[in-house]
Length: 492
Image (cartoon, rainbow, N blue to C red):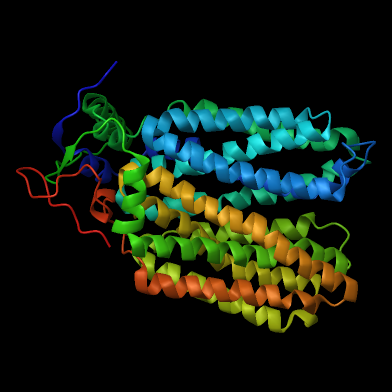
C-alpha cells in the first residue's frame, strides 16, 4: 500500500541512543552479529579443503587452477552481492535484507555440500559469497541503528572481530575432518559445509525477532511503525533493567521519501564527503594488504619453509589472538576515541609487520605465530574499526550501500590483487627455498597499513558517543533550524 510522504519532526534517534544496555541489545548482537563467525568458518574451512577437493576419489577432482578459481568466484560473489544487496537494503529496509541474505547463504552452503561436479561447486561458491557480501551491508547498518551511541563503537569492533572465532573454529574442525582415520574423506568436506548451514539456521531463528530499524522506517514515511517499534523496545528495556527511562529533548526534522536515487547517493558520498571517502578507502585497502601480506602466506610459510605438517593449531592460535584484540580493545574506541585508536592500531601493527619482514629469515613456526599473534591483536581491532567507520560517517539513506562499496573494495583488493602479488612471492620463495623472499610483501602491507593510520590521524571522525544523525545528517533532514528540530551538520 502506498505511503504518503511528508515532513515530520521526530525524537526517535535520541530515544534509542539514551537506552541502557539490556537483554534486547544482546538479542540484536546474537541475531545479527554472529554472521561474521560464519564467514570466518567458511573462509578457513575452504582454504583447508583444497587437498580433499582435488582428490577425484574423495572430492571433485579439482585442479589447482580450479581450486584457485573457486576462491576468486567466492570473492566476486561477495563483491557483487554486497553492492546488489547493499542498495536494496537502503531501498527496501534492513530486516527484509538481513533475512534474505542469510537465506541465500544458507541455501548456497547446502548446495555446496551436495556438489556433484566442479561447475555446481563454483556456482554454489558464487552464491555463498553473494550472501555473505550482502550480510555485511545489511547487518552493519542495522546494528548501528539499533545500538545506543554510547556502546556503538565497542559493539561494532567486537562483532566484526568475531570473524576470527569462526576462523579458529574452522581451523580446529579441519584437524578431524581431514584425518582419514577419524572420518571418511569423501564426507569430511561435505560435512564441513553442512555445519555452516546448521549454524546459519540457528541464527535465522533468532534474527526473526530483531525489529526493523526505526530510523529507516520514519525516513521512508512509516513513522507510525517506527513509533510502535520504539515504544515496544522501550517497554522491553524498562522491564529487563528495572530502570525508568528519562525523557529526551533532541529531535530532528525529516522530509520523508519513499526512495533515494543512486545518483543522489553517489553525489553525496563523493562530493559532500570526499575526505571521509578517502579515509574509508585508505582504511580498507590498508587492512586488506596487511592481512594478505601475513595471513595469505602464513600457511605456506609453516608447511614449505618451517616443516609444519598440521597447520590447524597454529592458525587457531593466530585467529584467537585476532578476536582477543578486537574484543579487549573495543571499549577504547568509545572511551579513548575513534581517531586515536584507529591511528594507533594501524600504525603500530604496520610498523611491527615491517620489523618482522627484516628478521623473517630467523623465525621458527612458534616465533612466527607468536609475532603474528601480537601484530594482529592490534591490527584486528583497527581493521574492525574500518567497518565501523564506513557504517557511521555517511548519511542514513546511503549507509548500507557505502558499507557495501568499501567492503567490495577491500574484498577485491584482498581477494584479487593480494593473491596475484603474494602468490608470485610464494612461488619465487619456494623455488629458492628462502623464506625472506616473502619480505617484500610484508613491507608493502606494512607501508599501506601505516599510511591508513596517518590518513586516519588527519581525516578521522570523532564519532564516539555521538548520534548517527549528528555525525552525518540524513539527506532528508531539514537544512535550517526548525521548531523542535535542529540544523543539519556541515559535511566533512
